[in-house]
Length: 207
Image 1 (cartoon, rainbow, N blue to C red):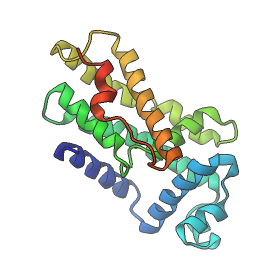
Image 2 (image 1 turned 90 degrees about the horizontal axis):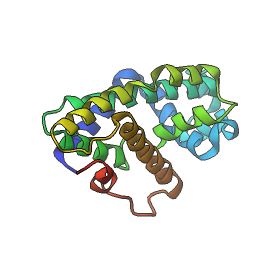
Image 3 (image 1 turned 180 degrees about the horizontal axis):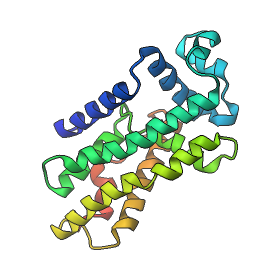
Image 4 (image 1 turned 30 degrees about the vertical axis):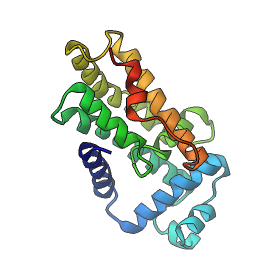
């Protein structure tokens, strides 16, 4: 992984700590992501989250009233993180290809907070009728923001002759579909299968 990708990952983690200042809440959220990803929203219980984090149920209830509240908080953080991760990459010095490569490497890293289960959580909000309405509303309001940042980078790459000249919105949709799909695959396979490099993922864009 390049130093620039590692720099992006550090920003992802710093943002998470800035948005969730309490260490115990961060632990609950991180373990909840794991449990929701494995069991889905309907199958997940507060006791499962507490057991995963090594806390009692009562301790978790000190911070969250219900699994609905935990899930909604995760979706809020994921939506904001998705926007910020792309924004940070776009603002970095470098060619459009370099910046998108760094972002993709950061997304594909097994330890990246901007990848793995965050995309899976967002996917669940659009496919499950059982999840809280507030979480669905957050996704509806926030889902276009990462696309706006990425489209600007794609247009810049097209103007520089680095990317094929196609509809940048469709390119952005394709890109995020790849990233989301790989995130789901990572969660399901537990790292047992090899994953494509950033270069392979971005070949559909390059001339």
